[in-house]
Image (cartoon, rainbow, N blue to C red; front, side):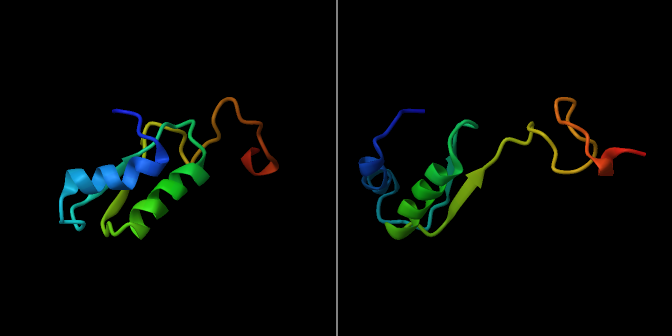
Length: 80
């Protein structure tokens, strides 16, 4: 809930977790965040000793299967 500068993220989490770096961490990023930034955060946590890093995703977004979203342009594969 509180913004944390990238450089202080791992040390702050180590303070919160104490010596147990096997406690699960859950990373939830804003949907507008670039994947590269989210991956950089997860990599920084991993290299700082955390071993159980989980990514929380929003299940309310568009589906990867089924019919195309109404705003998507139909392709040949979508035509009957």
